[in-house]
Image (cartoon, rainbow, N blue to C red; front, top):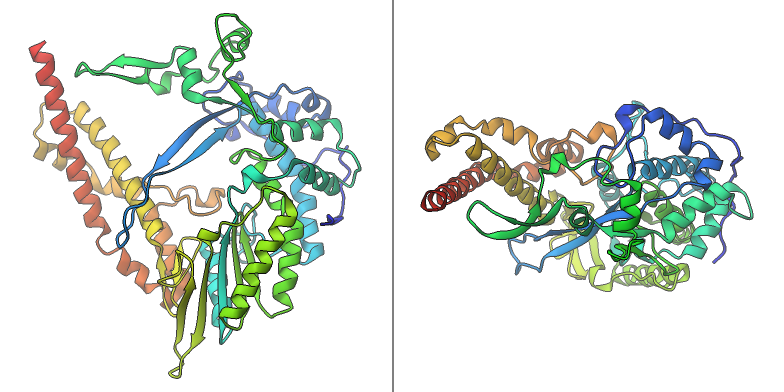
Length: 502
C-alpha cells in the first residue's frame, strides 16, 4: 500500500526543546551520569547523535496473575520490560519530538486526527487538559448512543510492536521529514531502535556482583540482591568493565548482549517507540476511517486496540471485521489480528426505548462491550473485571511491602499493636498509581480512587454502578493489610526462633 506524503520539516534545523535536571532519569544503567545541559547539547547536535554509541537496553520479565470472579483463573501473564540508558532515552525523546510535529500535521491533513488516540496529547477542553482513556471510552459509548442499531467490533493486533516492518517504517520516517534518504543522525536513531540490542538485567547485575546467591536469615539460599537496591550505582560499571564483562571482549566472559537481527520489531517502552507505532499504521487509519465514514460509523485505535462501530446488525459487524483483518495484512508479513481477542456486540433499542446489547462472538463482550478498561451494556458503564484485578494486585503487593517494612522496624510489639500503630488511611490514599491511561504529568499523582471517581463523574448517570463496584474495596484493603501483617509477623518470629537456636 502506498505511503502518504505529509508536510515536511527542515530536518537540519533544531526544534525548540529543553531539558532540566528535574527531567533526568535516575535509575542504574551502563552510561555515566551527565548534567541536563550536557545531555541537551548532545541530543540536539546531529553530528553528535550520528556518533552516539547507543547502549543495549536492559530488560526483565514482568509477570502477573489475572483475576477473574466468574471464570476459571487463567494462566499467568508476562511481558518483557526494556529500558534504555539515561542518555539514550533522552536522544529517543528528542527525536520523538522532532517527528511528532509532522506526524500531527499529517493526521490533520488526512482528516484522521481523532482516530489514533494513544500516546498523544488530545485536548479535552479549552483548559488545555488532555484526554485520557476515560474520555476516549466515553466518546465511543456516546457514538453507540447516537445510532439506533449498530454493531461494535473490537480487535487486537497480535504482538504489535514486535511485528513492525523496518523497511516500511524507514519509508514513513523519510516521508515525515520530506527526504528521500534519512540524514545520518536520524539513520543512527532508526538503526538503534530497529536493530536494537538487549541485556538481561539480572544477568548483568550478577556479572557485575550486585545480584546472586545469598543466605537468608532463615538459612535458605536464594538468588537476590547482594547489596540494597538503592545502593546499586547509577553507572553500573566502568567502560572497560562494560566491554569485558558485558560485551565479552575478555576471554573470561561470554557476551550478554543479544541483538534483534530480524527485519521487523521495535522495543516497546523506548521513548520514541510509541510515536513510531502510531506512525506505522497511518495508512491503515486512513483506509479504515474511510470505510466507516462511508457507512456512517466510527473508528478509533488505541495503540493495538481497535474499535469499529458500524450502523446495522451482525452482518455489518462481521463485514467490518473481515475488512480490518484483511487490511492489516497489507502492512507487514508479521502483522495479524488476534481472532481469539476479537469480539462483536450488537446494540439495539427495544420497544420500550431501552438500549440493549447482544453478544455475537468472542471471548469478551458477553456482558457488554469492553473497551479501554470499561464495560458498556447499552445503558450503564462499569469498570472491567481486569481493571479491578490490577487494583487488587497493587493492594496486595503494596500491603506486603509495607507489612514487612513496618514489622522489621518495630520489633517487640504485638501484632495487634502493630496494626493499631500503622497509618492505614495514609496507605489507602497513596498506594496504587493508575497506569490505565496516558502518562501525562497531570495524571502521575492519580490513585485508583481518583481514577474511579473521575470515571463515574465522566459517565454521569450511566456511571453510578462504578461506585457500587467499589463499595467493598476499602474493606478489602483492611483485610489485605491484616493478612499481610499477620504473615510478616509470623515470618519474623520464625526467623528469630531459628537465629536463637543457631
